[in-house]
Image 1 (cartoon, rainbow, N blue to C red):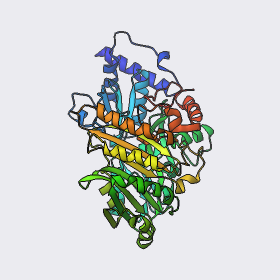
Image 2 (image 1 turned 180 degrees about the vertical axis):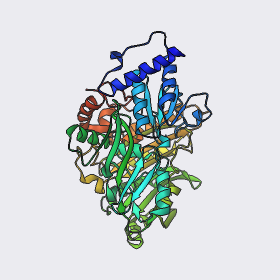
Image 3 (image 1 turned 180 degrees about the horizontal axis):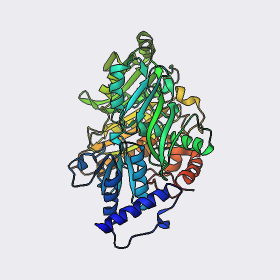
Image 4 (image 1 turned 90 degrees about the horizontal axis):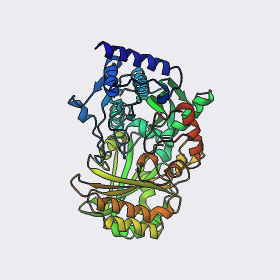
Length: 494
C-alpha cells in the first residue's frame, strides 16, 4: 500500500508539472513492473470529485451505450466529471501515464469514436446544466447536455426563443456545434457553430481557457476558429458554451410532409433542383427515402419559420405537383414540442448501422442522381434503412468558406445514408448497399459532413475540411503538440 501511495504521489506531481508546459509521454519517467491502469484508477478515485467507474460497477455498461451499437468498446475506466477541474485532472493523469482517452458527450458518435478499449472514457453526462438569458437572448449549456434536455427546458419555459439545434434530439449539443451544426433553422440563422459566442475548453496541457468572439490573443482566436467546425475530440474538451438565440416570429412552426411513392423520385427531385433555390430562407425542405406508411416512400419534410399562411403558399407547387403525392400532412405546432416528437425518427436506436454522407452543389439533383436514390431505396436490404438529405444555403452561405473551420458554405444539400440492421444479421449486404449508393453519387459530391462521420471515407481530410485543413493542423501543433487527442480521423499534426 505504501508503494502505491508513493506512486500516486509521483503521478500527481508529474501531472502538476505537465500543467506548466508540454511534455510528451516519451519524455516522462516510467515505473517498471507497475500496472499503469491500476495506478490510474487509484489516482482518479483519489482526486476526481465526480464518479469513476470500472467494469465492476453496474452503471459501467449503461454508460457505454451509444446510438450506433455496431461499435462496442470497453475502456478500463469511465470518468464522470462534475466540473472543469475534474476534466483537467483526468487529462493530466492520462497524459502522465500515457493512457488513451476519448470524450463522450451525447453518445451519438456515428463511428463510435467517443469510446475506446482499455483506456479512459471521459463521459460528460453529469455536466448538464443549462440557463437562458432572456435579455441578451443567449443560452448557456455544459458539455454533457443533449438537445432533448435543452428542448424540454425551452418548450416549457421559453417557447418564444429559437436556438439553432439538432433535429436528432439525442445528439450532444457540444458535438453538434463543433462539427458545424446543420439545423432546420440554419437557413434562417446560420450554422450551429456560427452561433457560438464563446466556449470554455480544457486543453491537452490541462489548461482551462475561454475562447470566443471576444478573443484578442491570436492563439485563442485560432483555437476558437478551429473549434467552430473542426469537430470534437481534436483540440480539447469543451466543458461549456454560450450560444446566440433569437426571438421567434411566433412559438409555432409550420411543419409539412409531402410524400410520393419512391418511383416518383425521378420526376420530383429534378424539379426540386430548381425550386429549392427560389424559396426564402425561412423555409427549409429536407427529404428522405424510407419504408414508411406501409410502402417505400420519398417525402419532402418542410419547416417554415414564419406565418402559417405564407408557408402554405410557398409549398403549393409541391403540394400540387404532378404526379400527385399520396400524402400531404401539415401541422402548426410549438417548435420545441415538434423537435422532441420528430427527433428520434432517424435514430439508429442501438441497432447496427453503416453511415455515409456527402454534400452537393446547387443543381446537383439531376435525373441521373435521382435515379441513383430511387434504385437504392428499391434494393435496400432492410426496412430500417433510410436515406435523408438536408437543405443548406440561406444564412449559412453568407460566410466565407474560411470564416470558420466548416468550409462547405456553397453546398446546397447534404445527404446521409443509414444502412441499419440487427446485430444478428450479416453486415455484408448492408455494407455493400451503402457503398453502392455512395459510389453512384460520388462524382456529384463536393465534400462530406463531419457530423455524419464515415470511418471508411477516403481522402477525408479534404472531404471534411477542404482548404482549411492545413490551418487546422497548425492550430493542432500549438494546442496539442503531442497528439494527445486522437482517433482514426482526428486532425493530424503537420
